[in-house]
Length: 167
Image (cartoon, rainbow, N blue to C red; front, side):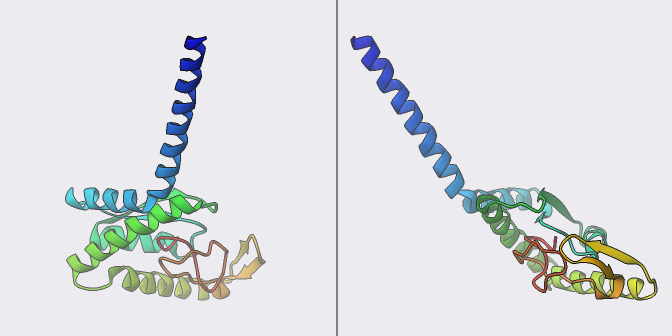
């Protein structure tokens, strides 16, 4: 009887520890994001995390960041982003973006976003291509939505743009 009681207590303690660990892991996402960014920066790696539906000029944006400033992008999620992952990526990007802007002396992300969207709009205005937006159907190339870095919306063509890191 005593062995059964000890075994049952051990299972209860084990389950309680597992639940507590899971809750802590979920709630510590922003702390973990900050730590991961600081580790990457200490190694000289400038990275932004991306998630969500990317704007149409996103490939140009990523290319310009990489070629001009050595800043890489890591895609951490697609359209579906849970709150802990969003918190992690947001905290990571706040640290990483601040460090990159301090290193280069200006807002490289905003500057690059504006240039990439202008380049895309210029290229799109010279072509008559149509694209397909999942929420709105076919859109004329010149009317495609422009996103802003750091916004939460994951909808195609929304005014607020894509999630997390200009995606």
